[in-house]
Length: 329
Image (cartoon, rainbow, N blue to C red; front, top):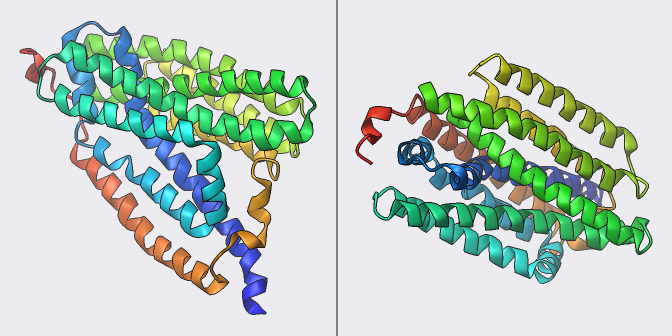
């Protein structure tokens, strides 16, 4: 009896944990993807070298969040895990392929051989990775949200608007992560270049965010207060970030960019329970509530280790990239 009483609350706890872990993955790995996408427009080899060096010591641990997310999803909602993989087989395959391409390219870039070739593959892997992430969220919403609250062809039109806005939002957010991070890691002319890029990206991000709001607001949002409050917070934070960029401030720019992304991410909460309605269903738990509590306890014990390790990495490799070390590239 006690297990039955606790089980729904455990389900909500897992939903919150999965959302936080997935968000952590998008932010940490999005930083590297943003630098990769940005590298397509950078021709100066000295600048490219500084960009690669800025994250070379910290990027290996970013994929840990994705592994943790997959493991927790399988352990907490095994039925959802099976259905998600069935429907999202293609984007999941592309995501893994992109991780391999990008990882190999980064490792070979550090060897300073065929830099132009591997810079291209670094950018290619980053773009495929970003598109696959957008496909995962967009397909999920198209399947269980738009078809539940809209009628064709309106649902198809709204789904396309949302998919476009989501894809562009991820691309611009990742580039913004990368540029604000690089502002703190570089100096001089290179830093000035990233300031200019970041200002333009903030404007483009706001436009892309509007597409997301249009796509989510028309088909009767389940929680309009959450939707419009989160969007309002996104606009305010974006304006604060833009002002800081115009004033040439360096500190906290990356955290402001992350705050904008989190606020925009919260707009998806307005779709609950339309996003994944079955998550509230008790039969999704194959194991007992006692086993779920045990799994939750183990996760809570290991989470601080993961967080502390990531913090340790960034503290070890903090500071500016030494431009003099790249003059021979």
